[in-house]
Each structure stands twice: as structure tokens, then as C-alpha cells.
Amino acid sequence: MINTREIMETIKMIDDQHLDIRTITMGISLLDCIDSSAEKACEKIYEKITRLAKDLVKTGEDISRQYGIPIINKRISVTPISLIAGASDAKDYVCFAKTLDRAAKDTGVNFIGGFSALVHKDFTKGDKILIESIPEALAVTERVCSSVGVATTKSGINMDAVKLMGEIIKKTAERTADNQSFGCAKLVVFSNAVEDNPFMAGAFHGVGEGDAVINVGVSGPGVVKAALEKVKGKDFGTVADVIKKTAFKITRMGQLVAQEASRRLGVPFGIVDLSLAPTPEVGDSVAYILEEMGLEKCGTHGTTAALALLNDAVKKGGVMASSYVGGLSGAFIPVSEDAGMISAAECGALTLDKLEAMTCVCSVGLDMIAVPGDTPAETISAIIADEAAIGMINQKTTAVRIIPVVGKGIGKMVEFGGLLGYAPIMPVHEYSSCEFINRGGRIPAPIHSLKN
Image 1 (cartoon, rainbow, N blue to C red):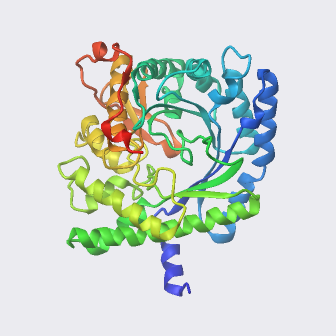
Image 2: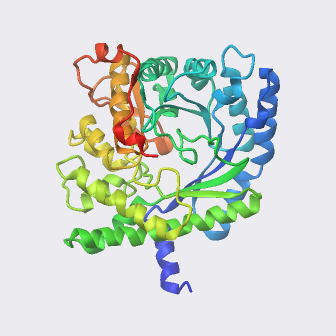
């Protein structure tokens, strides 16, 4: 039985410690929308999305009111559009992005993900067209998010795709230069992309999923930090135990919301992603959790070890609370979306190199990193290659969401607004990676990829 103390504890988590459901995401398969006519395919896509997701936002709001649980975002993810549009007669896929954007606006969701391609081994014609369409597509739409998978542990790293994505990110930055190069904030490059991720910008509905599914992403860095404040000076075994118990409580709340949304919408429940997703709000920060463990500033020596403990304990607590934990599930470290990370980057304690080291032990990778607008495309490609290698070798999902802000240099600030926050422009290495990137081909998969 739930007792009064537990009820009051949950209320305090919500009111004072920023506990929330970060997103309810409806995944929708568009495989039955394939048509040789791009116009007809777009009509089918719009009809299916608006039919299945017409009550998504209302349902989220109703659950939030009934249970008093903040549900911040309602989102949609769809089958990678390169798979759908590849059968059509379209010469570019901007029309598909516009259709997704219209469907997102008409259903009222915050974002729609799936303007995506998976090219970890090679390109199809549709993949190439989609990737080349990304800069224009993200410039002319408001709610569309894009992702490209360039590596897996089983396949290795497609370095031709890595090279191309450096160029695409630069073009996207230039195409949206009048809006702080914001298009790049809606674009992520993956290694080992997962099919059930509810978080943007990387969400897409994998081909192994059903016709429609409800996935929920929870969040609660502030809750974890508050729990750790009660065990100051205790050993790391105690710290891990406290984090596990807190993650359990957070995940149970996510499971409740996911199952209730599933029931009301008549759509199967998929997974709970228990990632600790921060916000720019003070107190809602992964960096502050690490500092609560005893680091003077996030980014100093010991940060990677602290993050490893946090990530592992979050997963252990979460899997005890739900049999269907999935997505990414761990600790996000986006610079612009985390008040503590922003502060650490501003004072120089947190560098791009340190962030890369931290991604070896946490969820995802280099996220919402702002760099000088004149950063060469090859340097961006090399950053992607490094992160893809970490994911490939460690058999984990890693990603890069990097924003070369046109017209801004090191030390300047860029403001994205809302949950995306703001960030200092961080320096990159000045030495060239051009010759390395221009080799092309594929970096072979590691020996442990042969496990079967």
C-alpha cells in the first residue's frame, strides 16, 4: 500500500525538485503509407498521423490534471522517412518534412521525429536524397527533427556518411543563420541508434516496432540531487543505493503515466526511458548531482567516475521498477540544457575533450554543444567520428548534436530558449582533421561484433 509519507514525498519531488514526465511520445509506423507518388504518400502520412495522434495532447493534459504530474512534452516519432520516400518519385524530400510539420501542428505536439536515415553501412538512393534535403527541411519547418545513423557495433563506421554529415551540419547552420543556426539543434548523428527512443531530436519509430506505440521519457535530476544531500560524506556504496532507490520511484511514476496513456489512447505501451534529462532551471541539473558527490565543479578530475556511478545506479533502480525499460535510459549531459553544465563550460572547467570522455559512461553523447560558426566541416566530421567510435567499441548508443553558430566565436553566448536553454561557444582543436576525414570508406567493426 502507498502510505501518506510516500504521497507527500512525491508531491515534494514535483513541487520543489522538478520531477516531471519529460515526454509522452507516440511512435507511428508509416510503412503502409509507401506510394510511388510522393503526393499520395504525403496524403497517407498526414491522414495516418492525425488519425492516430489526434487525442495525444489532450490525453497528456488530462492525465497531468488528474494525477498532478507535470507532462512537459507530447511528441510523435515515425518510421525513418528515407524508407518511405525512397519508393516515391520525389527528387528531394522537403515535401515530406512539410507534411510531417503540418501533421505535428494540427495534432498540437511539440516535435515530430523521424526525418531520418540509417546509413551505418552504406547509402541507398533514398538515404542520399533525404540527407541532402536536411538543411532545407529543417529551415522551412518548425517542429520536424532529423537523425542519421552512421555507425553500429556490428557494421563499423561509415566514414563517407560521417564526412557528409559534417557538411550537412554546416549547411544547416548557414541555412538557419538568422535564427542562431537553430536548425542544428533539431539534427543528431548516431552510433547504435535505438528504435524506441522517445527523446528528440533522435526519436524515430523503428521497423521492429508495431503499428503504433506509446513510449514515455521521465526526468528527475533535481530529485536525485536532493536525495544525495541527505547522505553527505557517506561512502559510494551508500550513494549508489540512494540513487537506485530514487530512480525506482521516478520510473514507477513513468510506468503509471505510460500505462494510463496507453489505455486511454488504445495504443500499446512500449517502454519507459528513465534518462535523467535536465533543464536550464537551477536545481534541475545532472552537473549538480556530480558536484553533490564532492566535485568542486563538473568537469574536474573525477567527473567521469562520478558519472559512471550515476548512470549505472539509475539503470539498476529503473529496471527494478519496470520490465519495459528502453530507449536510452541513463544520464543526459546536454550543455545548453543543463544549468550546471552551462556554468562549468563558462568558467572553463568543462571542455569538449572532457565531455567526450564522459560520454564513454553515460547516455548518448555530445549533446547541444555550440561551437564557432567558422569551424570547418571536416572538424565537425572528426568530432562525429570520435563519438561514433566510442559507441561502436563500447556497444552503446552515442550521438552528436553540435551547433556551429554562424557569426559567433569562442566565449560568446547563444540563446535557444525554452528547454533548449543557452550555451557558451566552446573551442575546438585548431589542428586539421581534413586528410583523415577525406580518406572515406568504412572503419571496420571491432572484433567483439562477431558475437552471435
